Image 1 (tube, rainbow, N blue to C red):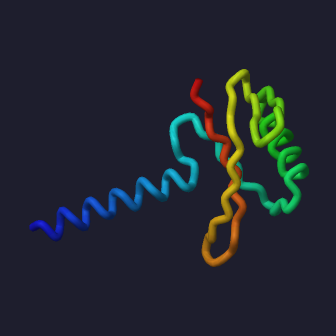
Image 2 (spheres, rainbow, N blue to C red; image 1 turned 60 degrees about the vertical axis):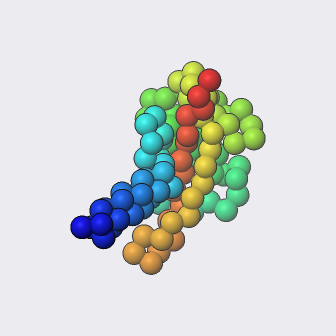
Length: 97
């Protein structure tokens, strides 16, 4: 009985960690681009263009910080393996005031 509870707790913790790493929190914005960006400036321009195409008002404030629709966000980049192929995930995390 104790083993089943332990397996459940470990599974729930792993799921929570995965969701946190992939940027699935409340208010987070995730973007997966077809191409991979190696230069930060190009990556930031692609983020701005994608969000503007979604109808959002975007301003890059420097140092990995954006203002999107008058809300502050910080930029996080993750490289994850999807089916053995590395994928670049862009996560914009809301900054709480």
